[in-house]
Every structure is written in structure tokens, then in C-alpha cells.
Length: 385
Image (cartoon, rainbow, N blue to C red; front, side, top):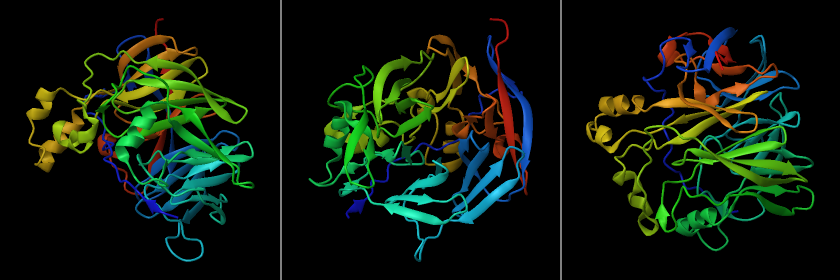
């Protein structure tokens, strides 16, 4: 199978220095308040990847070591194993993103791998056509959908690799995900991109790296350079569009589009810093819905830095505002532009079965711990409504 990947420019996941210096954030009625913490005895970098409310287990991943960890709510490590890169149980692919799936673990690499929670390779599933990626990165994932597999849909390479055509197909209502019957080999598209006024036909707004999350039977989709998200419902093994929700953030600076036929000039035109406005996380609570997002900076602010200097480039990226918006359970807007606590890594935040927001401590911003990690729990404080 042809499997040529398009390695896209990815946003550097750095936190903004504009965040609150306290453990409680929020200037209005809503804030995130730190309420508890759990110690995880593990050395090395760690990313929080998934949470299973049925078993109350967390899945984390060390990209450098290709090591998967599963730990419980007390922080005790239940399983740990290394993803093999050669031999009979080798797992190949770029930007691996292990997730829980029907009691097991799924990884979408060069194919879809299913592993037990102890790390035993159970199955390899091929995508049933030659493909390439128009988008990529750490959000690419696969999971179960009833008795089938659901995964981020790659672009078919059966008629070549036309990136411009692939981008336009997405804007024209192309599918963002695909469902595969592993027994029959039948497959069909789902989660079609909706009509939106965020993108103009014939222009390129940056590679549309999708953020796709679900909560029960509801699914959420966003792409970069648009502070809006799309809500889908899961019905009969299809993801059907319901509505688009906009985030009316103040002082947001979208990157400027280029003609579609000049898509390779996009990065240079926008100051060589790929940090356009985008949503980074959805957090569905019992009575509220939270979206974490960044807003970019003005062209004048970008121009004040020499991005060829690593120190100045880093300083610029840290200046990008990153905030959150609060909606009610029906996606009615309650508040926007609230600061995120300095202590958390917001890109991997999730909600536990008690309705608390959980996230790893950001050691770069909140203090280094050499031989362990800390999982923080936050509550949404309503204040005076």
C-alpha cells in the first residue's frame, strides 16, 4: 500500500505567558479553581492522551521512549510498555496517538493497530485503499464505533496526491472521518465538513489540522484559523451535523490566506510562525461546555521579533494569548476570553467521571519535578451568575 505522508507544519504547543499567575483563573463570573492533585511516579516526559470513565483509568504517552502508561485515579501505574519499532509486533507511523477503545488501545500509524491494555498487539487493520495525509499531527486517532472502526479519514492516493484538490474537497463538504467494517472490508465516510463563512473559496487558510473529540453520543470538530466548532450527533454509526458554534473572542488575529494555487507561500507570508488562532480542547461538563483556544497576535507584534533568533522566536510564541470560553449545555454563550491557570497543560485537559477537569502540571511554567509528574484537578467556579 502506498503510504506517503505529508508532514504538515504543526503548532508548537507552548503556553502563554499572559496567563494568570494564580491557581484560580477568570476575571468574570467563571474561573477554573485547583481543587486537588495526584502524584504519578514516573521519570521522563509525559503526555496525557485519554481517560476511561468506566475503569477510571488514564492513558499517557512518552513520545521519546514510545512508552505507554496506564494509571488509576490515585496515580498508581497499572500498566507500562514500550511500542516496538521492529520485529513481529512493530508499530510504525508518525505522531502516534494511543487512545482507549472498547477495553483495548487503538493507534493509527501506517495502519490501525489494536493492543491490549497490557501492550500485546491484537490486530493490524489496513486502510482499504492507498492514501496520503493532507493533515497530520498528534490528534490523529482511531476508535471503535459499535462493531466497526472509526478513524480520521486520510486522503486517497488512487488518483495521485493533489493537495490543492484535497483542501478544496474538505471545504466543499468532504468527510473528516471514515467507518470501516473490519469483517467485510466495507467502508463509508462520515462527519462531513459543514458550510462555514470562515473560509473563502479559492483561498488557502493553512493546513486544516482537525481537532475531533467526543462525549457520549456527541462529537465536536474544529480546524485551525477559525474560532468556531461544529457539533455532530452519533446516530446509527454515522456522525451527523447539528450546529456550528462561534467563539466571539476579542482581539483575535487570524493568519492571512493566500491563493490556493500558492499554498506553499502561506507560512512565509504569515511571519514564519505557525500559531494561528485555533481551538485546542473541548471540555463537556454536566451543565456547561468549555473550549480552550488561542487567538494569535497582530502582524505588528510578529514583525517586532526576529524569528530566526531562537530566543526571540520563543518569546513571541509565549506571547500568544490562550484563553477559554464557557457555554451552557445547549451551547449558549456565557463568557469568553477567560485566562487559563498557569499550572496546567491545557492541550491535554479532559473531564473525569466526577465532572472535574484534569490536566498534567506544566513543569516548565509551574516548577520542575525531576522524578514524578502531578495530575491536577480543577473545578469550574461559577462565581456570581
